[in-house]
Amino acid sequence: MRRKILRRVGIGLIVAAASVLLCVLVPQPILYLAALWYVALPSTAFVIVYHALARWWESPMGQNIMLLMASLAALADLLLVNVMLERPDWMRWVFLALYIVVGTAISWRLALLVKAQRPRYPRS
Figure 1 (tube, one colour):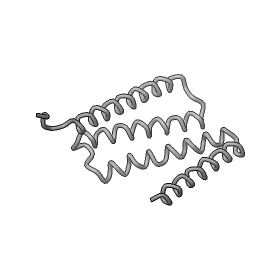
Figure 2: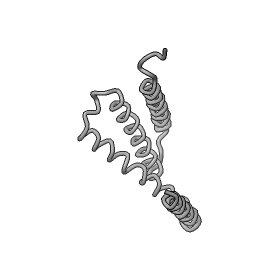
Figure 3: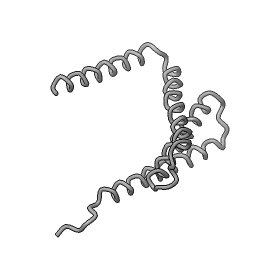
């Protein structure tokens, strides 16, 4: 057990050191663009695969997962477009709307969590 914990800590330290080294060696705009691609591709792929494979619309948790992931994917995709192209003025309103959707989805997830963790029977 102790070896397992030490191994995880060691891996974490190696990843942290590699991240710091990467930040020092690679210019910031390239890192920013790479990080956006790293978020945009899997989040968009998740939305597509989840829609194709799961019956997400049948439960509130499935709907919440789709809403949260789709809004995060849209936000990441728009940020990527924003970095690669010149941003039109109306895109500020799209970002604002997406931030509101993400906040709403997280609040909904919190309500689902509280409902799921509440005891079903009153304590006597």
